[in-house]
Image 1 (tube, one colour):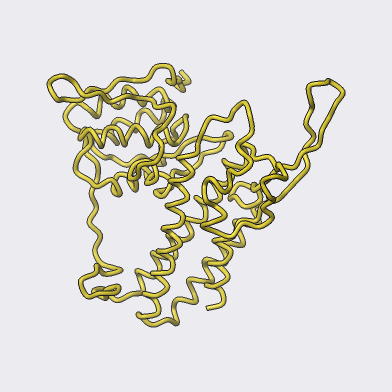
Image 2 (tube, rainbow, N blue to C red):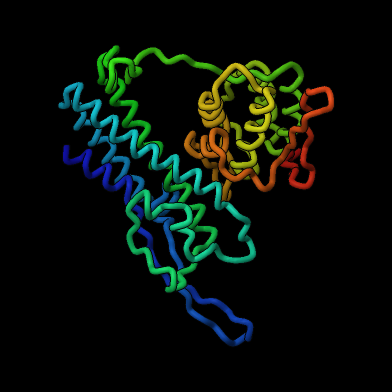
Length: 323
């Protein structure tokens, strides 16, 4: 069990780095040094990606630890992983609630506490607020990438447990659902005409190659060859689907099904790299009461006859058609 314990400890520990940065002041010759946090070394994109490699190896060794456990012990581990997963979900809700636009200034000095990271997990090298260590946009983005990566490994380990638990074994009370069994797959369906209308709003955020696969996905649920890359913020895409779902313009699935479907078929671009849309990130937007998206790409409005109409928000629309 030593690898499982080490994996869980590493999974829930964020090791900030405090570095010095030179800041030019109002006077052209005056330069001031300031402390700033970094977390790029704990993302899957950070060179040389040592953290990602180590954590991935630990997750594989932890999976080997599971083989020697009996069903009761596996259920206990499953409960523990579920508790960690719930803390990640809480983080995402806080993350979206405090995703303000700080493009022209640094984030608040107590941002780490605002999103509850230090309460939900172990945060090393966290300076007192009065030390004025800077919270920059790069740290916030790296934090989301680090959490996404950790969540993916956690989900893989939970899936491994489900494969080891005998079908029909219940968790806790006899009335509780089994840890494993045949999943029921529900996919989103658009009400008549909404698939094409939604496509015309979305297509400007995709390359011509992805546009060719976007409409078949929306109309007939034909999976693309690879995730379609949305050239905008991930929360804008999630918000668009949420608005349609809550207006009953998307039917045939639960919100959790919709989140998994979006995660499976879409990605987005950040820092010129393709990034995933993890279900936990999406759930905090679609299934919770987190702060609404501040730059939506569409607006769903109820009409006088009780129906809903969808309008593009042109001020945020960008055209990524390269032709």
